[in-house]
Length: 547
Image 1: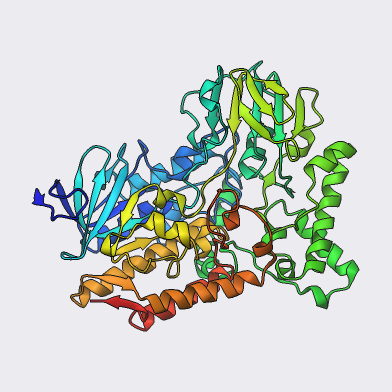
Image 2: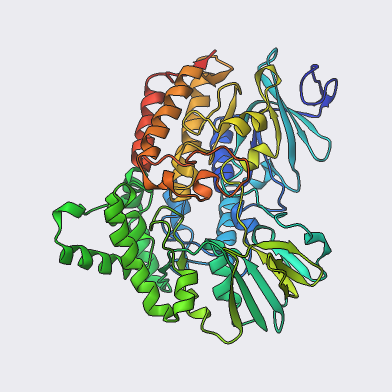
């Protein structure tokens, strides 16, 4: 179908090559479910993805050691018992290859591939006020005319890959973890440098240390780490977690973090001895429970946070032993839980290996990449064969600001978010009618949530809103400025009460130069957020102008 595009749409005077009710950007966890739900409503809908297959973050992040740190049995779709029980996990925290296979299973089981276009990047999307529709361009020259544009791009999908001057001059190979090649990379005997020790860097380091000739880890910001316990699953364990399907479907959407556990203890109610007992028990669980289900006071009370932080430091000191390593790798200038907390498997012990060297770049930063390796500010050149950049992402906003998205009056989302990061419940943005969003700022899915729990909720809300519009004969939906102002104020009030707001990290966009400072994730809790979203829907979408 070919439709003449109006001036101001996409490319003025261009020809639309396809007409859709809805276009979805992304074929990961959110995009697959969004496609399934809208197709079931009878919409003409299609998903587009830059990748060559489904998987989203689990397609791109195939670096050594990539794996879940949510328990596998909760990082799943809960809308279908048959779909849930039709897949069996091999362990509690499986690795990327198994996760990618699971998402392929979902796509095949739901027969989604026929409505997904791979190897295609959306480059622009312009809203036409006269038609109330979007004109969307691809890197292949296609122009798609769609009523609804739904972004399922992921909150960590815009890698910060070009971070140091001179990267293009490096004689060896250089990789960002989120763009790791599909073909095997031979690390044996190589001099490898890893830049970044966040959750991703830690997974890489602990995995490749025994494979490489020599490993240099460039350490800037130390992390509080928790040991992971990932028991293998046999038939008995698989049957046990599958038997909990109804329980998990009932409880996960209403916990603070979308995980199966929730905060059970109050700091003030326990003696110091009882607190220690609780911390020891939860620490030994080998999960993120210490962060997400110990004492909620750690996020608000500096004294409580310091005691829990010192508990974790003590555990790390006992494993590191070496005073120099302790000073370099154990945080002291921010509190536990105010950054993303990584799980690890013998990561700290890696630094005791004779072929591993920790290089502090906190006060002697990386200045550039040279043909030979990495040069620090003091002039030292660390000679390397391979450089691995675990340098993170432009979280929450980057995936959309890298697309030329223009709303009413030609306003640019990149420019708007470059001044002030605002959304209405992380579901829409004032000024951009019929643009629905998942995993963007001001919702728990921007950082503080088991992602499948939150993405399912957002996708269902969007699908129900579109169903409501269609049943009422309406064609356009946009949040009012007043509703967005109220949500931003509510979000900020809760966020500013936490210690997260006082700690520089990607949670505030501090890792991206010039990015407006705002806590990206809604900190009021997954259950609270869901309730507020449900209340808006029950009110007939009060605060959203539907016409």
